[in-house]
Image (cartoon, rainbow, N blue to C red):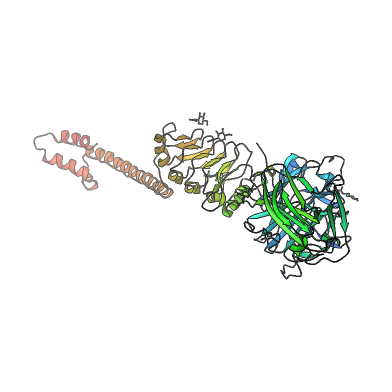
Length: 624
Ligand SMILES: *[C@@H]1O[C@H](CO)[C@@H](O)[C@H](O)[C@H]1NC(C)=O
Ligand SMILES: *[C@@H]1O[C@H](CO)[C@@H](O)[C@H](O)[C@H]1NC(C)=O
Ligand SMILES: *[C@@H]1O[C@H](CO)[C@@H](O)[C@H](O)[C@H]1NC(C)=O
Ligand SMILES: *[C@@H]1O[C@H](CO)[C@@H](O)[C@H](O)[C@H]1NC(C)=O
Ligand SMILES: *[C@@H]1O[C@H](CO)[C@@H](O)[C@H](O)[C@H]1NC(C)=O
Ligand SMILES: *[C@@H]1O[C@H](CO)[C@@H](O)[C@H](O)[C@H]1NC(C)=O
């Protein structure tokens, strides 16, 4: 069974101003594992320390690439603490963001391998690290454009069993609300993960900031590419300024258009090929500016653009389309790629040469629906009351990314709410020691609960009876005590109920007992105190507490009465005996003492025919 473990790292940055004024995009940079805030050269960039965390281990960092920010620490997440770890960053104003995560390598000889792990943002998996990442500048980080709407962003690292995720930095940089708008289908339901970003004909890796680009650009990283291969192209550059470069919504740095690759006579096509994940959609952005003075007007350089062999743009004439020389032209298109490579071909027409200044490729990722919030809260309550071990984690979203759901929670997509819901809890034999909270009924889509073989104590919550869809309830082999709630009788869908091996007592609810007839499989054995169905002992009369108190008093009163009665009887018996003795002696005052002796006297008086002595002898025998 896969075991998952989340750690929550809560980062609060009160120092940040959430103003959305155009001149100041929201920017938060976090130096993982840092004990204090850091200003990094050469741009004096501010990195916040990651305090208020609850997990992971800070360590000294080895930067795998020289483009990695100059930070000395990282935070890594040992598998022993569980495979899922999240930073939850609060107070992020609603907006559109470039989220970037740089990876690190722990500076210890015992950590000699690069870790491979998955990354999710807001519950959507955006990236899986590929082996060899630490040898490539543009693989030293993951980056994606994400809409954030609820004031927080969760960034999670999911272990895949290849080393401990080690994170050097997190950046949450606001961009224009329409940044990378590509037309139909674009919007909040999508995340654009940067697959590559190339500055053609340029020799140095640069960020927007190195180009003194606009802050609204998201401080993109531009990987330099001097040639598409085998001397098939030439470099060209200019110092002249470029029109239409740094404008909304993408604010590209002007310098991007000051270098270019140009095809040659020997190889007229310019062709760039990259590896991609198959069966995904990609958004491709191509940048041009005519910086060659030998091209003097419209029609002198015309080329087609093909993507994986299919024409994406026909007859591209940069001067014509941008309106002038030294003017930026940006074209974008989206393509579905089935294979493992993506090839952009620029095919010149009429003997001209193709040019290209920059290429950007994004993977288009559909945002995952999250889990119904009240069910997430209910699971968190359950986590606390069951005292779930560390290795479970159980933070972030229980059901997404779908590749990394919470261990022990079964998820199902609910088409009415368009959210994930929990339909099963399988926490059998996990050494759990807590109790079962009443709030478990908030998981109202549960069909199956198996908590068998733990050490859960306390009562069975009566609220379980309100989970109408419950079909299987296995609480066997725990320390549940008290009685079985009557409410379980309302569970009409219940097929299996295992309560055996607990310390339950009292009567099995009649509604459950009756159900035994309907082929349901119930087990109540090994509970010393249960009674009331075949196979268990018979129950005594069922009495309420007040009835018991009433009966108690009644019994006391009865005993009291009996004592009084027997005292009276004893006394009378004494008197009678005495009266008999007196009557036997014929004492005259005996008449006044008791009626009984009076009767005896009468019997004697009216027995004219009998012997007075005989009557007196018979009297007491009648009364005894
Ligand atoms: C990190 O390196 C510093 C010296 O540069 C050292 O003092 C410190 O103990 C190291 N920390 C860890 C966790 O190894
Ligand atoms: C991208 O291309 C689409 C048409 O394919 C266009 O509507 C959109 O404005 C372009 N985006 C930008 C930012 O130029
Ligand atoms: C790619 O886009 C098409 C059309 O927009 C969509 O139907 C398909 O599901 C997308 N594929 C992936 C893998 O996102
Ligand atoms: C619950 O889990 C136990 C132990 O893993 C298993 O033996 C039992 O069959 C499960 N109960 C149900 C109802 O599936
Ligand atoms: C059940 O056990 C708990 C301790 O685990 C105890 O406090 C409680 O009184 C017990 N309840 C009953 C009805 O025996
Ligand atoms: C009920 O549980 C007991 C153990 O507590 C077991 O021996 C018995 O076989 C179970 N009965 C059924 C019908 O599963």
